Amino acid sequence: MQNFSLLITEWYRQNKRELPWRSVSDPYTIWLSEIILQQTRVEQGRAYFQKFVDHYPTVIDLANASEQDVLNDWQGLGYYSRARNLHASAKYIRDELNGVFPQTYDEIIKLKGVGKYTAAAIASFAFNEPKAVVDGNVYRFLSRVFNMDTPIDSTKGQKDFQLLADSLISKENPADHNQAMMEIGAMVCTPTQPKCLFCPVSELCEAREKGTYLDLPVKSKKTKVSNRYFHYLIFNESGKTIIEQRTEKGIWQKLYQFPLVETTTKKWTEIPKNCVHVSDEIVHKLSHQHIHAKFYTIDGFPEKLEDRFVTISSEDIQDFPLPRIIDRYLEKHTFDL
Image 1 (cartoon, rainbow, N blue to C red):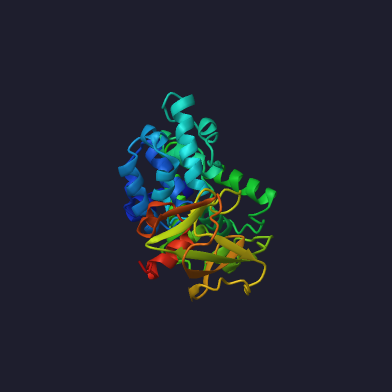
Image 2 (cartoon, rainbow, N blue to C red):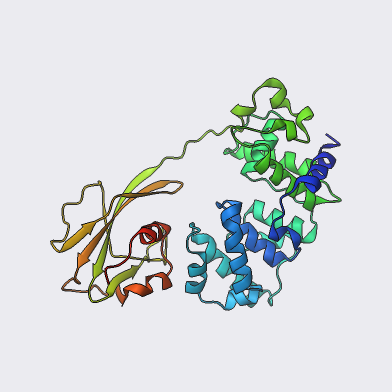
């Protein structure tokens, strides 16, 4: 496989997508793009990347921002722990590293929210360090080229694939090599309809020769999904409403929401008498749980306001960082002011 790296990097130079984070070598900017693109499609991530670069041109700007501003700018991307980790790491760089972004893989991986893949990407793209990236696209690409059926969600599989990736990476040009691996996995070696005719290493691909490519990569574990039932109460009185902040650990920590009642089944029998509208169910799918939500518009405020409740003008609701499921509701509904 001596020609492997040459073949994929040449393909990359001729076929790569023009993306704004690929034209820079600044580690802070690359870090932003990598965190934003975790669990996010490139098309969606592009606008958020530009927003963060505009609002926080340097790591110091990000560190000096309030957490609520950062969460507001992240709103709609989901997986909000990414934003909180991003902000915490920026403050760490400001306070502990004199504002200088770490410059080696071993230092970068110490940042909160940065794992092996992200550290390798930043180290290779910004500092030309020969550290191989292995993400979902790379797992798929390598498993097919080498017809590897070791489960990628096993300890052995993760170790074996990392060793293989490390053995293939170009020491002279690790940045383009890593970019090529990711790009081919994303654009050519796709899950269900791989474009083998356009693959630069199709002649080397063992899975294509043996007809096993659609069976790869292999996973040994199935994610158990739980169902949760949320009932959001939209109190409405004289153009004002009530929100609360999620403080418990778990999904959407520190985001704001309408007062919430969670039940163990879809049916809720304690709907307030002054409820004037009940929405259709909205389902929001997360990796380990499906949220089934309904929104109840209620005429007037409760007799007693809980300490955790915050009264705001209804038109100011978007000034607060909200879970995507509430965003989806508000995109189609307006308050009866």
